[in-house]
Image (tube, rainbow, N blue to C red; front, side, top):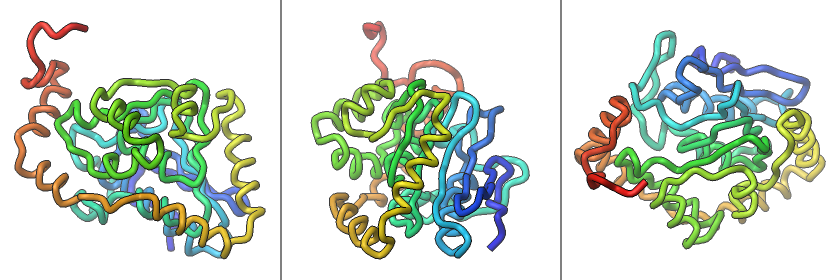
Length: 259
């Protein structure tokens, strides 16, 4: 299997038994196209299938890990065609179920699909400069994956807060809520991510796989059908995306809303 992930905005590099998947699309603040989502999934499968690789680290560039999907369009120049956006394109289940350990090295802004990447990784090692948000409802998107998985991480009450308010929160709060497990000084992120990889690789792989399977049973089924039907049929996602591009409140926001 080639190390080419099908998009110029993902780089796969090898350092001994560890592969690094670097999200690198600075002109669009690392917004994820369909091909980038699929490329992350390909990176997971590549590491799982390569006997010379034992673990995958996913990270971003600059002050952004990943802000979620690109609302401006589904693809960019130089990307290979991928399946239409849907469960077969998205990488979250592949990350969660990966045979090889997956560590998210969250270097900065982490929202939407980027936050799901961090949540589904075996360990998320987070810069103390990172910030988080679940912004989907601001765009009119009923995200089924967040609705299914976030309560398993933080409980129903906190999940309601984060999903329904779409507020930003920092790394310290993410750690306190149990959304992620490790916060480190920004300049120590790379070293801390490799340390997490080394710790996991000291555990027995077959036993580790069984523990991961049992842990993953805490996630309920995901109602993708309702989510993608809404994306296709509801006017809200289209209005939310237009409002985002036009830098204005969506039509559903009441006038004179308190700031």
